[in-house]
Every structure is written in structure tokens, then in C-alpha cells.
Amino acid sequence: MFKTCFTAFCALTVSFASKPDPYFLYEQILNRALDASHSEALRDIAFQLLRDVAEGHPERITTHAAARLHLHPQQLKLLNENFARDPGVRAHAYYAIARTGLPAAFKYLQELTPATVADLGPRDRHEVWSAAQIALQQARLMKIPAFQDQVKFLENTMAARFDSYSTAKIQFWALQTLCNVGSESSLPLLEKAFRAFYSSLAETEILFCRERMQTVQRHRDRAKALGSALSVATSGANERLTAWAIAQLAELNSTEGDAELDRFQAEIRSVPPPGRPPMLNAFGEQIDRMRACNPRRTVAANP
Image (cartoon, rainbow, N blue to C red):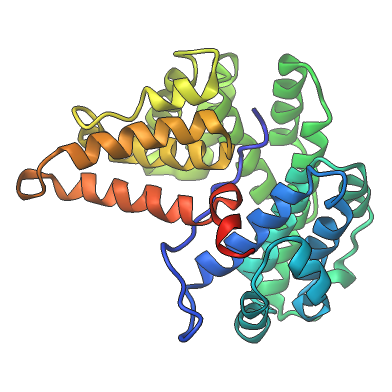
């Protein structure tokens, strides 16, 4: 459940003959490594790749590692040429490290120091360092087996103080995670926090939090619960919730999640294009972008 806290974005296509869309490029690589980290034979290679990207050194990734992970050498070349020091890429690599759930990943995140991001300018340095600290909290959360203990950890995190650059971002992550997993008992605390974070927009954000909670509580199977928010008849009435559900299903990276996305995509395509609302087209494109980064669907393209 708590492995789906970070929303990933990626582009639909990439051409090796032109400058690639960065979202497709780095998300495909990171997702491939994340998926491989669950294989005993590949976990060490995958973890090292994620470390190299997080530390801003994709040039360290060997051709042997790329071949083992079914990555095209040109993908790594373009990553190194265009995005090696990009703070967004490095931040997402830290998130992926946390999501591996590996003991080595937890130890690595625990032992990070600000020196790891010293090569960046002040603004980018703070962004990447905060991401690494959020990743550490995510890794800690994943080690807690009981749901109520997880909720307690997140509630405590919302009140905790970290370094001056990371505290607000970590607290915000905990707040959003409690909404995403449907912790209704946390609502009084969340409402207070939303009002502190958002001021005039607080009520809108509280409503969105409640809608997410209601969605995930519709079924014990998270994929089916999220899928309940996807319907051509109702999705146009709540575009934000629909986009969130699509992203959450894509991050599940599961057969069940794919089935719900396939169903919704088929519903969208069943509506004749002349009368199809533009927002349904946008949802279909969002699904395609997410799918383009799915390692289980793209591995065959890079034998």
C-alpha cells in the first residue's frame, strides 16, 4: 500500500534521433531499475544504477549493467548528456531507492550526508536533499507492518522537526500519504494541517483528501478501489480525482492495476471521437504516458 506514494510522470514516446522528453527518459530507466531490484539476480545492479543517478553520475553505469536491465545504450548516453545533474531526476532516483525496500537501500539513505549533494547550487541542493530525506521516511514507513502503526508514524512525522530545508516538505509528504491511504481517523489532524499549508485553498484540498479516502475505502483490493474512480460517465465531473487514480494505478505496477487502466482506456476509445470530450482524450493520453514507463511493458522493446 505505502509503496505508491510518489507520482511518476513520463512522456509517451522518445526518439533516439532527437532530444528526448526527460520524463520518459529518466522515468523509464528508474522504473526499469526499480522493477529489477525485486529480482535476486539483478537487485545489486539495479540498486547501484539508482545510486549512480541519485548522486548525479549516470556515466558510472556500465554497458554490462545496462544490458542486464534491458536498457538501450543510447538511453544512458542521452541521460548522461542532458540530465546528469538535473535535480528532478536525482530526486526521483532517491524516491526509487526507497521504494526498492532493500535493506541496503535503507542503510544507504540513513547514512547520507549533505556532502552527497554538495556539487549542486543552493536551490537545487536543497531540493535534492529534501527528496532524499523524504525517501528515508518512506523507507522507514515501509518497514512498519501494521496499518495503524503506519498511520501513527505518519501522524508523528507531521509534527516532527527535521532540518530547516526538509521539515515542511516531509510533513507535507506525510499529510498527502495519509489522504492517499484513507486514514479517516487522521482527518482532524489533516484538516488543521491543510489550513496551515493552504490558507484560502484549504477547503478545496480537504475535500480532495476526503474524496481520495472515500475512493480507496470502496474495496479491500486497492486496484479495484482506485478503478472505481474511472468511468467515462463520471470522470469528467472530477478531473483531479480521475488523474490521481490513474497515477496511483500506474504506480502499483501490477497486473490488477493494468487491468483497471485497460478497462478505462477501452471505455474511452468506445466513445466516438467526434463526440468524445477533450478531457477523456487527456485521460487516455495520461494512461499512455504512464504505460510507456512501465518496465513490464517496455522490456521487450530493448532485448
